[in-house]
Length: 125
Image (cartoon, rainbow, N blue to C red; front, side, top):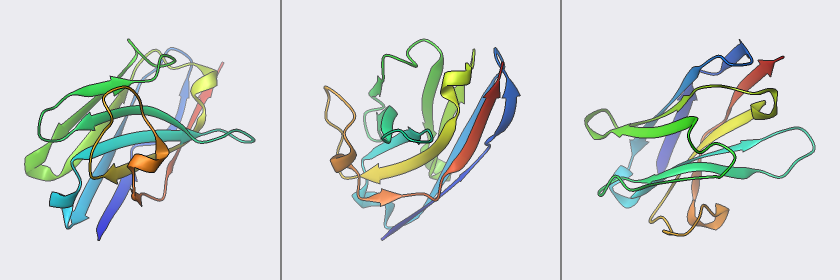
């Protein structure tokens, strides 16, 4: 079992920045893929970014490329999502997720078998 706890959400004006953190505990060795998803009201949950823990290879959704950065501190079992140049369209609940392996060509929900409780990000215009 892997437990994931997100933090760092909040309210910010358009153009601002936030950094989300996700601390993993438990049997983390089984989870080589860490990702961030988001879900806005009335919309499907979508993948935002993912990182392969051992290689550090990252993948981003087109909607956040160049603005968001996923990173990790393996010593702290923590994954971060640095979000810059935020837009109102980025408003959503953001979820951290963990799974055994990332696909190199995209972010897919079925890659992940552990999820955090989510943290709200609100961007006002």
